[in-house]
Length: 74
Image (cartoon, rainbow, N blue to C red; front, top):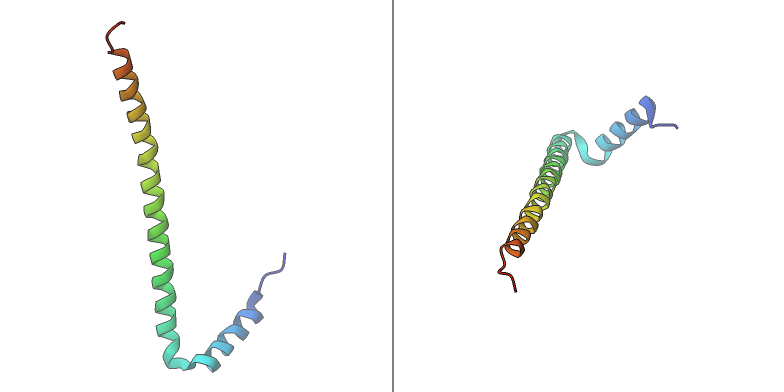
């Protein structure tokens, strides 16, 4: 599988310099970094939120089973 390679990266950097100028590139880099950081934190939060729900559903199932076992005989 072929990647971009060094010449492709150099071409992209030159193209970015021509389009945005040297003053805007650091701002764009920071914005991209913040975006990736927020995405990573959001994905981490979703993964952490989904894990406790599974254990909570087991706790609810267990408490329902305990209630059924404690019912008075008919």
